[in-house]
Length: 201
Ligand SMILES: NC(=O)c1ccc[n+]([C@@H]2O[C@H](COP(=O)([O-])OP(=O)(O)OC[C@H]3O[C@@H](n4cnc5c(N)ncnc54)[C@H](OP(=O)(O)O)[C@@H]3O)[C@@H](O)[C@H]2O)c1
Image (cartoon, rainbow, N blue to C red; front, side, top):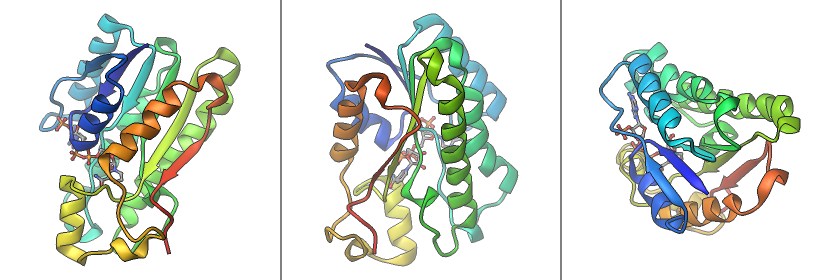
C-alpha cells in the first residue's frame, strides 16, 4: 500500500520504521507556518502521490497554563485533522489522537477537548463514508516513552508511569506495531478507537 505519513515528529518516525514494508511518503516540515499553508502543502503532496492510506500525526501538546493562543492550538489539533479528512483521496485514514481524548486530565482541558473533538469527528465521518469504502479510525496512545512531548509532561508533573496498569509507559515501537497491524486489517476497521496506554488507573 502507498502510505502518506503527515508530520515528521517522534511518533511519525516510529510509525515509518514499523511499516517500512509499505511505500511511504512523508509530508514536508510543517511546523512554523500558518495552518492554511500547511493544509495546502499536504493537499498538494497528496494529489501528487495519491496514497491509499493517510496517517495524520500532526498535533501539539501544552498544559492549559502554557497555551498562548487557544484558537491556534485548537486549529493544530482539530481543524488540521478535519481539513485533512477529505474522502476523495484515499481508502483509509488514521488520526493519532491521544488517550487524553477519553480521560479527563488536570490542567489539560484544551488538549483533552481538542483531541476528543477529533475522536467524535472520526465516528461521524466513519458513519458517513463506510459504504463508500473510505475508513477512518483513531489511534490514541498514552504518553509515549522517550518522545519530546512525553519529556515535557514529565518535566511538569514528574514520573507518572505507575499510573498505568503495566507500570510503564508505552514505547514508540508499540505504537508503530499497532499501526502496522491495523494497516493489514481492511475495511472492518472503521470508526474505531484504539487506545494504547497499558491501562490507566
Ligand atoms: N508523544 C506522546 O507522548 C504522545 C502521546 C499521545 C498522543 N500523541 C499525539 O501524537 C501525535 C504526534 O506526537 P509526537 O510525539 O510525534 O509529537 P512531535 O514530535 O511534537 O510532532 C508533532 C507533529 O505535529 C506537527 N506540528 C506541531 N505543531 C505544529 C504546527 N504549529 N503547525 C504544523 N504542524 C505542527 C509537527 O510538525 P513538523 O513535522 O513540521 O515538526 C510534527 O509533525 C500528536 O498528535 C500528539 O498529540 C503524542
